[in-house]
Image (cartoon, rainbow, N blue to C red; front, top):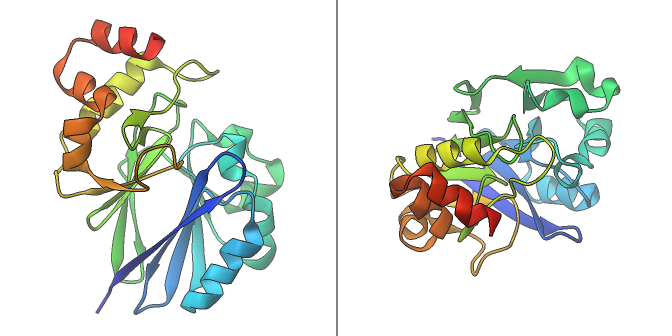
Length: 215
């Protein structure tokens, strides 16, 4: 019987979260946003006895992708990334790229993983959903959201993406891309009550959201 296991590793100088998602029965894992300390990631795979089956990138910023090359040195696996964010990656990674549009799903052992396109922080930002977990990258933080004042950011698209996330089930557990909140994870129900950006996106006009993110 498939059982989801998730490891949340805080790595690097920017409090990045790197994730390992695994089907403990199949002993297969996916790494999300490998960066900063690939030996720590490899060690955690060994502890679980898991075979790495893929790399998933929530977006293309350096602090989320700088370990991809080192991962590929020990595991020749697909790299899943949105097609809009893919051009930034090293051209040597091209044979491994599996570009996404959002809405696709893949199997990890007996688990089903679904990809949601949530642009705003970058044009190709993605969230990953597996079972009752939602890995949100730099789209949704605990009590916050990603920056929208960077190249390829778009506050209007962030508003739409957060509005989409606000329609998902309260029972989902949010796993963000950085440890920027009061807790490493939180239920989506808590975020709907406590996250001001999610609240505004869910219930207020765009102009109110633009005012909030520009402050």
